Amino acid sequence: GVHFTRQALEGLCESYSSYEGWASWTVRAKRFCLSNLALHGPETFQSQDRSASTILAWASYNFDADLSRGRVNGFQQDRSERDQWLPPIQVEHERSGHAERQALLNLIQTDTLTSGASFPSMARGAVRLFVTHTLCISCLAACFQYKRLYPAVRFAVAFTVL
Image (cartoon, rainbow, N blue to C red; front, top):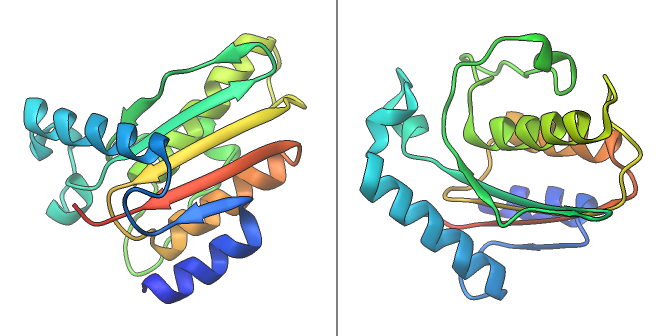
């Protein structure tokens, strides 16, 4: 639940939030998520589980000189070589396609393409992750795995239920 998610994020992030209006970036991220859902609808995200298909994750980064304005990610069944970066955790059902994990995998892929490395680089900077629901245990695990790969990156997470 929300209480345990907050506790986990306190140990992981430099900042986190479970309510709206916490920072200007969360307002922008929520707006991106809502417009994406309105434009494409939840069926776009190919999930057998309707609840997973309505959860979106917006992520942005600022690595060294490379900056993103943010990207909305939804559920995506993507079993590929990218799994090695953030091995999926299965709890009760398959969770590898969850939006939060996909957002973090996309950030890693962007870093490896930019740096030319086959493994995550020693990038410095900041990552912001906004999720339209409380993070599940497997998505929290993906956040911890990401932070282990990028110890020099400041990590901020916000979540709310739309």
